Image (cartoon, rainbow, N blue to C red; front, side, top):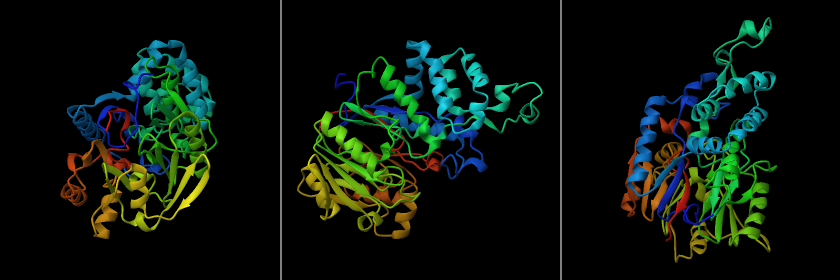
Length: 403
């Protein structure tokens, strides 16, 4: 695989190519009773969420990045290899936690295979299939009398627009992750098929596989440099998963050190990038609570060492800078910090050194970043933010330039 197609060795180098997923009907399949199970705290209004997401994409394009969409790449896989559609459907059903998908697997398979347009098929799998859509569940069966358009034979996958998590690009390779929750594990099937069969991406190096026993998610993985990776030990990434990935990176790449960053395991801090993101060569935005409630470990080929230096010094050493500045999300006002961190004030997407995309709702944090010399491109966020993720969460860089 040519580096000009697929290569990420920095959090801040100019963004050249990025993967998104435009929110679809899966958001309209959220109901209050399923919110906790599907990892949402509220129900986004789809039409406005799409407007906001389209604006996000337009900002990326205006700043020199090519935008590709998850749904399009999966469609291209099936258009190139039509025989893969059936095994993919079998895999999707197998990964479903819904007993109905298994009970009516043949009918579900027949229904999906009857969708002639490949992209419509992909979007249907993403949005979920109700009993009513599936049709006759069996003549005279009890289920046929109780069939409902509110029960899903195949559940929706509403977290897909957070493309950061299912896999992670590291250098010119990829870690296809094992997601923490059963609800999100099907997301990595799309990545597996893309990186196994897509004409552009099938030859990339693979450092982690979705069938691994230990969970790890992309929101916890930071490319600090070509030699140093930082990974959060969080609610959704296990220390065992980090060790497995570290060994793979040491064997297959030029990475020499993995810094494991333990953060509190809470819903508010689900990934490292919800409390910390890099915004310039020597600057990060951080939720101040993390400064005193975290632990750092260095993993190298020779072993594991707990780090006792302050976070600023650990990051400065990793980045080969004299010093690093940590900018508090919300400033010194803890109420503002808590509120704006919840609304992803710490979750920015750096599109070039000193220039980031951020949600417009985090006015205090954005102003503080600007006062620290960071250029902010603000995007609307009334609906996208309801999914508990910001601009970094919603994007997976495939290609960054050189620093």
